[in-house]
Structure formats: C-alpha cells, structure tokens
Image 1: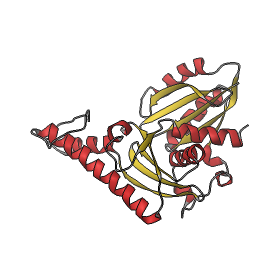
Image 2: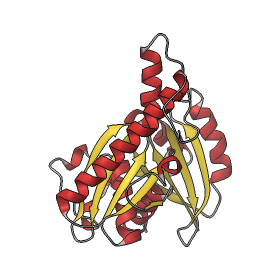
Image 3: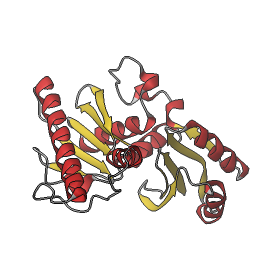
Image 4: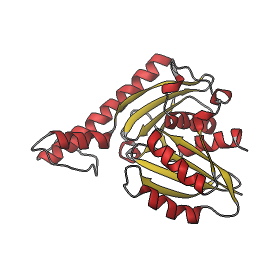
Length: 252
C-alpha cells in the first residue's frame, strides 16, 4: 500500500508518495502561483494514483484558495482529502500558544516532525516565503516561535521597490563587502540574515537556559549551514515527516 501526502506553501506545492513503511519514495514539486497548476496536477495524478494507493490524502496548507481547488481535483479522482488541522493534534503535541487557530499548518508539521524525530529540544528554522523559527521543547511540545521576512521575497521586494538596484541571486557566501552593486547586495543579504538568525537563536537559548538542536529546512539551508553559532542539522523533509506522523496516528 502506498499513501499520498502534500504540503501547500505560498511558493511551492510538494506532493509525496510514501510506501507501506512510511518512507518517501517520490516527490513532485509545483509552483503555487502557476497559472497551469490544475492542468499540470491532473496530468501528474494519472501517474501518482495506482491500484495500491490509499484513497485518503493528507495535506498541510497555508493557502486556502489553492487548497480548495486541489481538493476538487482530488475528489474527482475518488480520493478523500484531509488537512492536518482537522484533527485534534493536541493528542500528540502540546501547543503553548495564545491562538492555536493562527498557527500555520506548515509550522505545526515542522514542529511535530522535529519533536518525534529528535526527541529533544529543537529550534526549527524554515527558509520559506517567510523565515520562521519554531521552538520545540522535549517535555513541553511546541512553545512558540518567530517569523521574519523571507530571503527570496525580500530580494524581490527590494528590486520591485527601487529604480536602480538590480535583481540578483545569492550564489556563494561573500568574503568581503561589495566592490559593485551586486556584491554589496549579496553581502548585505548574507551578512544581514546571518546576524538575524544568530541573534534570534541567542535570544531563544538565553530565554530558556537550555541547549537546542538547530534544524534547518528550506531552500537557503545550505548557505547558512556553516555560518551559525551552533552546529546545525539540515532536514529538508521535516515538514513531510510531521505530516507522515499525523497520517499514521489519525488516518490508519
């Protein structure tokens, strides 16, 4: 038996096929704002859905409009779709937040994935459309977090808001400040986010007075892997691991 799980983010949609041992065996990526998303998804589903595919599909979604569209497509294929916040997740994790309803499904999945994988205090840093920091305690579950501007979005916003600054891509960590505009931008973004990330980690550690495992996920993880004040672990599937845990506990 194979199973389907998915994560709908503001930038990308990731759909994974998992096997009977709940290991990811195939991953498919789509752009969330792709104008041909419905067409592309329908084509891919022909190959995704087999006779041994479980009819229950579990999503994590932070884009309600896109989720509704995808639900309609899946239902036409006789699949039953669930979103992780439909379940009483407080059975598997404590959430020490003021408004649970405002906590994004992606951050919940990240927290559950880290909590059950590492069984220790963790800070999960997700380099997505926003750069998020989620604090997971070994005994207390989800303890809250920090949301900072995303790197890619910040670059795009700077470019769209200025007349003379060029669009650029972060490619390698700068050893020096810039000798031209693109080098100056690269230094500003790399060094700026390095400082932001390290400062937030310091404040979280100081507030709690305990050690944390630092878990990085998302597109810019590798850029900062060796630039942070603490040793880090890159887990690009931590969101899916959280969704898998929820699938096993609530849909099997």
